[in-house]
Image (cartoon, rainbow, N blue to C red; front, side, top):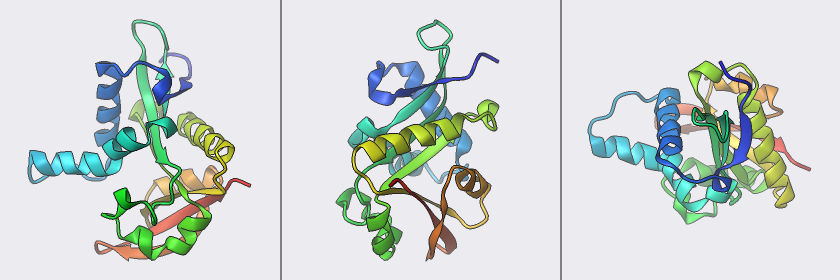
Length: 185
């Protein structure tokens, strides 16, 4: 395995086919959803949890790049996020839990999704991406950041270790999801 990845802003590098392919591969590798009714359902899932951020919030995305600038470079992980309060941004209206948790999302408006290639998990890559995003959000004036995940999911421990704590919970699509939040003040 190469040395630890370098954290870079998504927009700071050319959007080459390989990097986008790595991001998509990591996205589906990390997803809890592994089967889809159709290609359209798969595309809609990708749009909801990844592509909308790359389209509307690319300035807030980060990559963990292995061997940057070399012929064998690859993406080991990525973070996409938004600084907009999702309870007030219409592009997130399809996720009703944001409006349910509007009081909390107002306190912690920035949000993120981070995924790491399986070979790079447990090495601090995810934490480095989260810290880079939190520094970026703080510099932009965001008072806090949040993530939503299922109660009891393995990523809860990761987020707790990265300074997040449970701020609330809500039922959505037959599951309990928790809002984990981290102040940036």
